[in-house]
Amino acid sequence: MKKLYENFAVKEFVEKCAGKEALDVLKHFLKSRKALKDEDIAKKTGMRVTEVRTILNRLHYRGIANYTKTRDDKTGWYTYTWRIDTKKIVELIIEEQKELLKKLEKEREMRESYTIFECKAGCSEFPFEIAAEYQFKCPYCGKDMVCIDSATKKRNLSRQINRIKKVIAELDKLK
Ligand SMILES: [Zn+2]
Image (cartoon, rainbow, N blue to C red; front, side, top):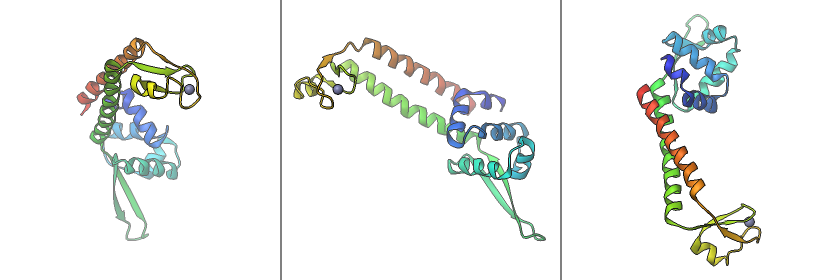
């Protein structure tokens, strides 16, 4: 489970879902490998209980954290015991990465099949037919649109695509 925490995509995703401190909470769960009470996590990480709860609730919202609620008969207070669904984290990231991959592949395909015109100021980009309709003037700023060499952009897209494929392959191993 150490590997999961070290994975860059996992770190980035957890941070995005629940904030920077969420990583400490996750780390703590992965180390202890069991269900934990929010008070105990707070003690171990030095965070306030309310902070820990906020993080866990955010993770819960994404389906990553689950809890069981038990009532203390004497005090009438509720205790929340939390678990982290590590499989779910990996699944969510793979889903997100696959969507991004689809988008980038579509864009690369578009650049392969069409001649692209770009506004000289950089505010718009259209395939030839549409640029022609605008008489090669940018509809936003009125500047000329010029035919661009897509080679560099295609190369960048390919690089991004390969990187995402690698991320997905690594995550597949963590499932
Ligand atoms: Zn423009």
